[in-house]
Length: 235
Ligand code: ATP
Image 1 (cartoon, helix red, strand yellow):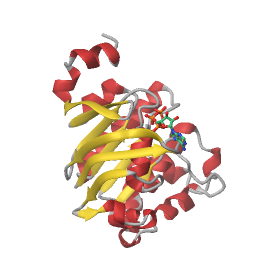
Image 2: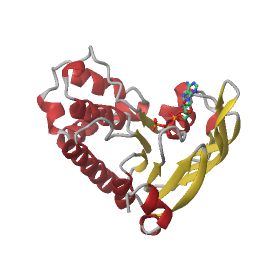
Image 3: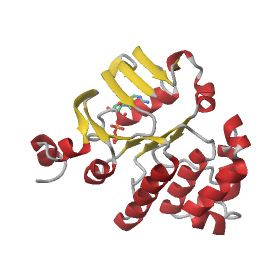
């Protein structure tokens, strides 16, 4: 579904991604983990086109994604839920969800998707008329995920959904992501700092350090890898 080969991205001549290769198969939940500044957000921004690639290829659903304008990529089925949530604070919860449904697929499936989003995140139904900027951090994260789902994507990209949230709130959101993935079979690409949880739930994971994939594998292999245990799992 998503096939990235030797992707290079830099800012003002400074390389940030130095030849990253990664794949997500249809229906997989894949995690990208790594320390601050490794380039995880930059990777997502290059996939959605917020930053241009300087080399390499990205194929999505058999298309050359880098040849598609950034504004066209959501219409191919890519939903990017950005770091820090970035909901529209002065719009209501319902209006934010509607904004997500601007793709043809999202418009066509709007009522069905809205019912599902409300079932996964009942608080979004209860607070439909409330301004998004007045929601708690956890509720805003649920709204950001709901807005992404409203576009009826084939690939959901989640950038650090647990960021800045209390552990119990982050756990609840993480469990919901797994449930959404299990029931929809949507492909999910997740950037996550909670490495233990990411490796528990993801089928496969990539470890990104200073712009390079230094390790990749299925979750069992990585959870037992000495380097992962020492650097990320505190063992
Ligand atoms: P974090 O978990 O802290 O968000 P990350 O792995 O997502 O880290 P990125 O945000 O992709 O890392 O940043 C990778 C590197 O690129 C960092 O050194 C960062 O300072 C740099 N960088 C990111 N965005 C820009 C930008 N717009 N202009 C210049 N440098 C940038």
